[in-house]
Image (cartoon, rainbow, N blue to C red):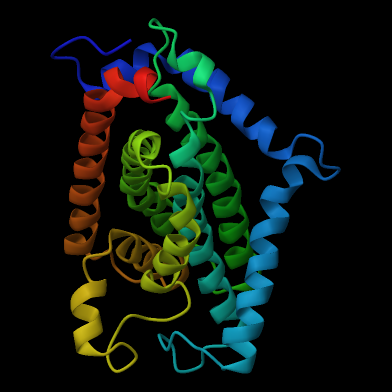
Length: 274
């Protein structure tokens, strides 16, 4: 089932919100079905990643973000945790999206089923993990860090929203392409690592830490700007960088629209290929 002509993406999703919610709940349950810890893994996994990266880059390599002269290992760990939380949502999106439609071939052949819900259900499950991670990050900053301001909390959803649009667009794009090019799913783990190191999760993207030639490439990464903005506003109580924020919105809206367009453009051929 394709959306009516002249229908906005948000109006189309609003009509399907009940189905989206149901499939998102199923996606969350499927990820932890059969495990003893269940949804607690949404807390355990980011903490394990934090411990690993902090040990390697914070302790062994003595990494620091260098924002404050008196920066402590706790400051570094909190900044890394916030960055990992945001990155992990994108990593989960690109990891699950290529198989989102392929995994349910029986639904592809049902003409009346809105297939665009399938990638969005996986994205919705990633958003649940993101929400839990952000609550943990903000709570940790309030307890162990330099404190959280109301201004910082107010800006956080504004900063994160374009990343949600970006993840939805990526999910649609990769889900559609994954049907025709099955190798896409195999390259996603490597791409996830590329995004990790290109998004300043473990460092501050400023000279001389990042060579000028490298920055000319990294500066186009909207995930990097989202992570930096979140750190500056929530952790370091710095004023919002309007240009960077605007760029993330341009990228998020563009990917949302492009991914949706590609998915609906290729959808009529899904059943023939599967």
